[in-house]
Length: 370
Image (tube, rainbow, N blue to C red; front, side, top):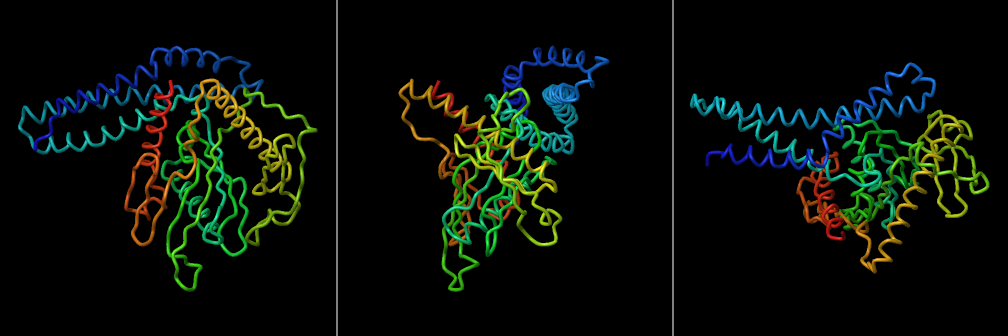
């Protein structure tokens, strides 16, 4: 069946109109002018922290505007290509238009998903913690598989990451790991990964070859910024230092550089050991502790609002995805029903379709609650 280019282009333009409305292009242009004015101030770098914040916001705003305007240009170019191919009855040109249409559908869909990330902290960078759960050594191995999955996903997109802490299990795998994804909207994108993940497979650690079910928990929090004002009095923090653990031969293992920070009022504990100095680990631990307290405050405020509204629905973030490697191969999200049979691809970081489905699902729930 021949492609109905007119209908497809009309649909793309309709989606882009929604994107422009949510993005508020005129407001974005005004913001860029204001930020450019601030960035050109001769005394900008007298305050390095503020200067970095201004230049970072300007870079993000320009990228956002270019993304929207660039997509509009691509749709116009596609329309010209279709006209040329149709008038000349040129099958090669129309085939080129077909390929560009497929690419545009994907790109516009991704841009539409980005506009759904409108939560208070969605545009922040993310701190992700993975913890092994029930299932013994299989669960620890599963935690390490998830860590690799997320790091490979970030690598596919050229997103910078920093592993802040790894706690190795005795036989294999990880007890826990914490890493940062240092790119705008990382929190909004990855927040849908929070919850309990389940793995079903023939255990490579069972000499009888039995099937094993194991679990791992994923926590995703927004990275705090200097404007968040999460002040923690010194008398509310207990700091312990110890020698880093892990595979031998690492310089981090030679001194008492690892830091365990406990927030006494809430009992929240953060450990950092992957930096070489105690000062660096302490700073990283404080940053993650502040981020967790920020998220806790946000959750408490949301819970209070729900309580006032009489909302007694359970949280959406519990057991949310199954990875089945035996007796068949399938990864299925239990909230969105999205599933794929290519389990090796998923564990190699191909999780964008799960993220997109999760973001759309979460947004639909938020709309239903309004």
